[in-house]
Image 1 (cartoon, helix red, strand yellow):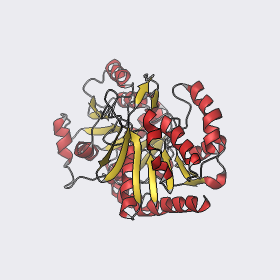
Image 2 (cartoon, one colour):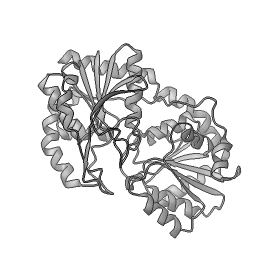
Image 3 (cartoon, one colour):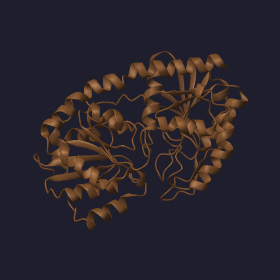
Length: 392
């Protein structure tokens, strides 16, 4: 099959979390199975930089990628703003030549443009929101207006909608996508694991963390919905000078508030902000941690970092607003309520019980094989594509 993957930003851009990794892995795995895969994205590199002042065709690690010139308007601390790619029409042949189009994300220019071209050329359209349908954070009125207009209009054209969570299935239903078109499939995640595996001491030595100190890792985008303020407060309330919280990730408008809160709670030196880390350095952080914690307040499905932590053998602590917490709880970590006291209690339970931490760590390999086996997930995605093409 000729498959076009559409995503707002793609490698080497790394400012928007998991979807670029998911599309990268999916594209390469589909190539391995003999499919013709092409990525259509924008030329955004980071918040200030574009890769070029024009649209261009390139490649990323063997994947053909069309990078469209982007124009960015209205970015604020609570919203990414509006990104448009006027050259999309020049590359409409990508849709005309495709057998199936897989659009990642929602409420962005490429989502709208690609859905229009799939309708024009009568191509099957796979929709995967990746948790972006919430209206809880930033420009709520505009998001709801989009859903009532363009969202409902494009929903009529969706051949299949891939959902990660029960909540996302409900979002699809409210948008008007029929139940028969919705399939629940986990994200395809296959991290590029370092060889040899980094020693636990490497990261700790770099950031001055003692061998006997307990290290909690928060690795995510720094934004309000990720609940970093709850985690910082819970760690402070532990009152344990031997605990260090390491915060890793790109700033999405929340780092200053997190740093201010750390200072107010007397946590200077106990909370370490590294900025974003990638590749080898990221897995050095996982390896050094006693546990990985993500205390999101907004609903999330399957954060890539949770699966990466399991690949690293690192136990996890999640709030129950994250749907995967139901799988994690009691298997490779604990789930807790979105509440400072509950988070504090769960942290204490795990950090003060080395045997429990060791048990969770030992279960991570079998956990991944059972729930996130890449070959099984890829089989299901291929079947999703085939059934969509067959219906068109």
